Length: 315
Image (cartoon, rainbow, N blue to C red):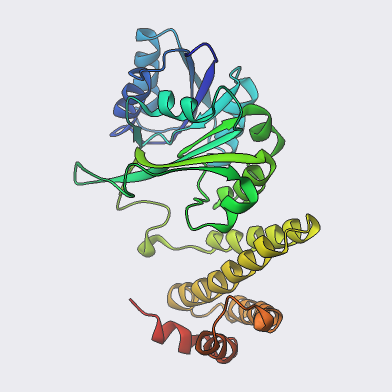
């Protein structure tokens, strides 16, 4: 049944090569009761014009043009005007399979589950690459899911009850904004479902925000978000999730140290601050039984000599 309205929010900025296919993948969904909200975030190419043309062809599609404010602001703007019971985010340069919403809604069991996640796939040089076994389905407590290896921090690949999305707006002016809100959103969902079927496909673009060659200091936003999540889960008495997040924080500190040193070697102040936080966190995590002996020793030494970790873990 598709009697429940689902809002699909598409933030778009200078994606003229991709936005047409993205919108077409949503308008062709087998689940029909949808509203499609495209937020043109101040595009300077033909993205806005393409969106307007698509809206003229499908009454379910609404296009909002705003000055450029970033991905978080675009997602928040779409959320504010959404009317659906559930929300799905689709980035303007990605596509979804035609059964995406139908299968995701089916997994909610008529609304029992507040958050559904699917496996993602990639589009590399026009070819789709699937991840996962395409068959496994898991349902259970959100806290158990956050402890699993299946949880994806990204806002995409998910169908989320609208009140949860509105409870946790994305931080404007930041990047890695998913890290700030998705763990909390998942936790508050209580019960979640996950399928390993790849139904969301992102384009592996050379100008992606995560491309190594395009590293810039805004990536450090991630560290503050992870640190805040540690406090969040300890406050909820979810100690196992908090310790897992602490491990994530340590590895993120080491990773960001290496990237800052590579791209901004003169920013000694930032490198010093990252090393200080790394030493504090590593000392706290020495009692973590999930970190084995050799790794524990390596982390301790690397907290003083991060270059050692980077040399030993280099791709």
